[in-house]
Length: 459
Ligand code: BG6
Image (cartoon, rainbow, N blue to C red):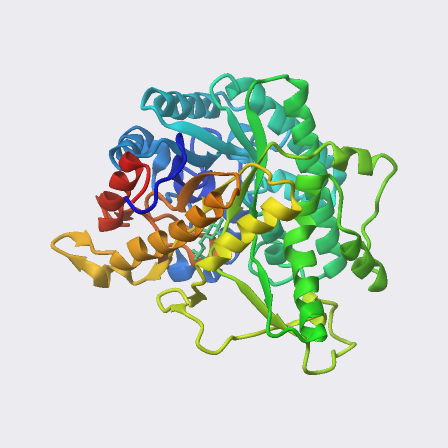
């Protein structure tokens, strides 16, 4: 074997409640912003497909967990839907939801699959959005209560908790770039949303520690390295700004308990500081995590701006840099994202050298393919490109571990092709393909291959 991974390495995949469960209006679940947005603007979703049924995990969790086991999962990440557990966001707990999540967790444990549970994957309950969502501090407290309720209900069996998945994404999507509800374009409001998200994260960490359980609590961040076009100081500064805004805005508070000075300087310079209250910095300091989940798909390449900014346009991150298309970059032609395997190594080395070698794992990595049916042969998706993609990333990850990075596992995005927000079922990522009409799951070649990797703890 060329690449042997450390003992007890986590092999598995990741998904989320809103993207898999379906049963969006069943058994007392409250509406989340995706249910609401779809009702208002179905045209914003690829082929007009909503999450109402998604991949029917709510119905098929038991057989799905058997499929996980079949391809060698020793761990799996999903999320608890806030609006299913507490339909109005705070107050009454929905007993049907408690029953469902107990069943899922018990079944995973029975099959020898460690449940990794995340508490927020872009799915704000409508009742909370109606009072301002993350712009309102009341929502921060309601979320912390929801988190504490989850720890109490399920913490005896769940030993790996995550407060948020990719918390920068609702900031970008909902408040800057118009790809999530509520479709606001306003940098200052975006900053407030990000700031309150960190407070919510920290309060959830505090709630977990107050319960003195014996598990770990973390956060999952999409760390996208920012590579400058050149070593020209203006390009270096552009990359630094992108890194501060999109990576370090969450990484520093989660790993070090404080915001980077450089980020505060940018916000002050452009008059975009959020409303900070006395005591906030103590809360943020208490939010340092035990474990960091790293999602990595593609690098960000930037250069200094070539043109002057239109001062009448709304302030945007792109006032500080421009995206750069590197000639000769390797592309995933089926998704339109760059593939840069070494990025995974660079992230690990950065965490080793600049973040105290924080314990971490790859919580998402994967290759989306539009129209994947074209690779169907004899009833199976022959996704050799995905196997190659995973191998190439794993070999760089292996090198980082050899060089001392404290990486404890690898989860692919995703288990069964699932519903993905506005892209719905456009890009397929799973180890299993999903027939949307019949809901049949079929193992892809990559699923077969992964079972061997997990069994051999390497390849
Ligand atoms: C990840 C998200 O960043 O990207 C997932 O955490 C999402 O929720 C995935 O489904 C794939 O995105 P897309 O747009 O290619 O379907």
